[in-house]
Length: 195
Image 1 (cartoon, rainbow, N blue to C red):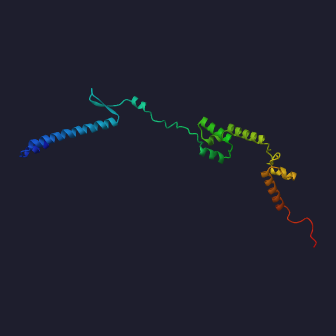
Image 2 (cartoon, rainbow, N blue to C red; image 1 turned 120 degrees about the vertical axis):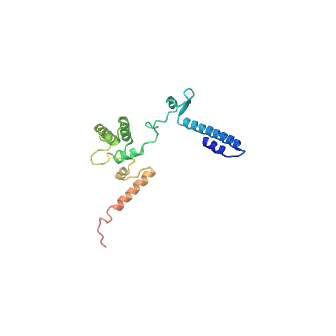
C-alpha cells in the first residue's frame, strides 16, 4: 500500500487527497472481506477462534460423536433372500429350502463362506439325514427309483384297474393315457389276414 501512496504523492493533482481516501477505504473493505472469507473457511474445516489466545483451534472430537456416521461394517439386513447364495446352493444340488436355510444359518453363525460350510462333515451328515428322512416320509424306496404304492389320484392306478375315475380332470388324463398306450402298442393285428 505504501507504494501506491508514493505513486499518488508523486502526482501533482488536486484530487490526490480524495484518491488516497478512496484507496484507503477500498483497502479496508477488501481486508474485511478477506478476513470474513478466512473465518468461514476455518469454520468449515472444523476450527474455532479462541478469543483469549487469538488463535484458531480445532474443535473437540465430542462434537463428532453427536452426529455419528452409519456403520458400514454392519449393514441393515433386508428381508430379501440372498439370491446369489441360493443359486450357488441350487447349483450344488441343495434344492430343499430347509437344507438351504441350515447351510446359510451355519455360514452366518461361523462367519465362513458357503464353500467351507459345505465341506464340513457334520453339515454333510445333517444334509444326508434330512434327505433320508424326507424320502422315508414320502414313501419312496431308495432302490431302483420305483414308486412305493399308487394312490387313487394316480393315473397308473386307474390304468391298472382298467376303470375310469369319477373326478373329471383325472378321468380326462386317464383316457388320454389309455389312448397313448393303445397307439404306442402293437399296430399290427395278432390274427393273420387271409383275404
